[in-house]
Amino acid sequence: MILSNQLIYWYLQNKRDLPWRKTKSPYKVWLSEIMLQQTRVAQGLPYFLKFVEAFPTVFDLAESKESTVLKLWQGLGYYSRARNLHFTSKYISDELNGIFPNNYKELLKLKGVGDYTASAIASICYDEPVAVVDGNVYRVLSRFFGINTAINSTKGIKEFKELAGTLIDASQPGTYNQAIMDFGALHCKPQNPLCNACPLSESCVALEKNLVKELPVKEKKLKIKKRYFNYLVIVTENQKTLFNERIGKGIWQGLYEFPLIETKKAVSEKELVEDEQFLTLFPNKTTMSLFNNEDIVHKLSHQHLFTKFWIIKTKKVSQKTIEWNEIKKYPTPILIDKFLNEYLNMK
Image 1 (cartoon, helix red, strand yellow):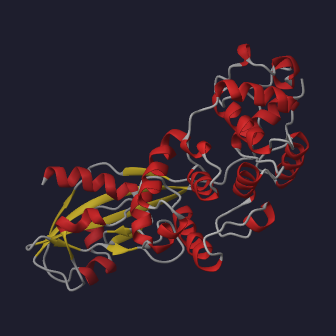
Image 2 (cartoon, one colour):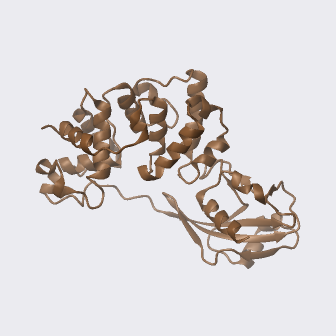
């Protein structure tokens, strides 16, 4: 039995019951695929349900405010996905009359849609025989064929894409793509794969040569950058605070945060109050205390944020403020949302 038939047979017996699999709506498939980039199904599923309820159609999503989209996305991470989602919904709504492109090449032109997402939508919704290649697919193919080319190298990306294309079942490409992804997620897992009960075991090179733990191969990651964040949590006498939108192209664009002083290393209260940014913001007397005695370490893909939250009580500030009882309405990074939950429960 050829590989595609074995995987589809396994899939029909073991597939996960997921809401986006009950439709060929390109809107819902697109939404799910964008959400599941860098995200486990268990984490993404409740977000998908929330989004479909809030935005039943691409027109509803397009008519919403970006801040509303970001607030619903809060906690899912990689927020550029949400901004691209919103941008693309407007393009599809305004320029394409709400109709998604119906082939891989045109789907690939949409902002935020790469090879994987375009392949998934084209195969699942339009039966175009284009192979998906995600982390699960890399793992299954590298182990089954015993390929040690790094999956995050230019050579590896090309090699695995070409191989995947030769294996796809042209008569049911969407089913095959979902089969190999589910097989990687549920059976040929990164840790503790179910090799003893594997339908592919007789032909798996990695199993035969005892290479299961060594494959797939990845090139070394980029060096992790350490950053030191000092958030100034302002509490005025009339219960207002400063909470501003992050701008620019860095992390968390479009999300809201307290005034931030970033330093080159962890700093003491004395060092912080002598900082030029602090003196500009607080020329008058303040009362200051550290909320967390130890740095909160928030890990992103290529950087770790060592964060302190400083509670600063002052009569007033010159900048535009918001009411404390309004603060949870704003979209924020999960780092700040966790702080707010703890801080507000103590007040």
